[in-house]
Image (cartoon, rainbow, N blue to C red; front, side, top):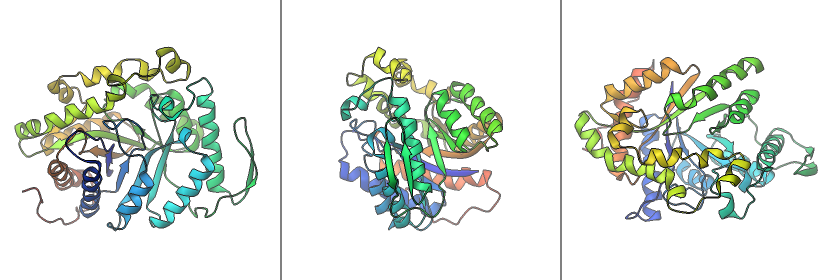
Length: 363
């Protein structure tokens, strides 16, 4: 079992953008010291309470100078906002500068972003996305190539530099096609935070079935917001504001601005954003968030039980990724959660002895 951290870099009033980035950099350094396998951040634009992570590669370039072994991961590069050939070149450069400590995913991005970027929200968006995926990996995997698609035509091209290795690649989302495409290509899938297993059981079953058909191996990463303390009551008290903020931040593009019309979202294959699910999650009472497995809050033993419950039902689970700094969480709480999880939860699932760590810095 691998363990990683995932951050959306949610920006809430009372903390400057400079402070937010500085704190997350410190959290990455701490995660490297504690033995986490990877640190992932989202790529997202325009909505600060959801995320201010508009340039993951720049962030990772800074983090790489301060760390030794941790892998950096973008979840996900939103392809509609990139020329796939330029993005392929940038990925290749990043991999060199990061010492081959880079992984990434690709996706269409959230359905509320296209109008803010001046992009069409239409029936062709999925086709453009899948063609962009094909062109991106054609560029990454070939010295020279031509490409004759519906949306991209390229003659006698080739990126420089070009990666010398294949990447671990991730897809994430809620549509069946996401899971089919990942299985076809042998890629990992990332289960979106906030959703219990039952919400994506059908898509994960589809992924495993298609993997068997294509001769690929399921690789499932489970993301969950997590807060931990030796005392359950303390954990619940300290986590409440941040967990409420996490759900509210994820729904904020829908609740605090005018989203695209429902018919446009449905026509473009973004029906999830018109379903009301995000708004309902944001309105969930705090105790129900915990009881309903929307977030993990409790003692190390209780969090271990939650992870074991996922293991029991989720064949192909390879990694658990926790979010500890969302919703306006104070920096010391993020550090505390990282350290207790590494010291008390991760060793339970790993055969090897955990790495030595110094005394928790939040004491």
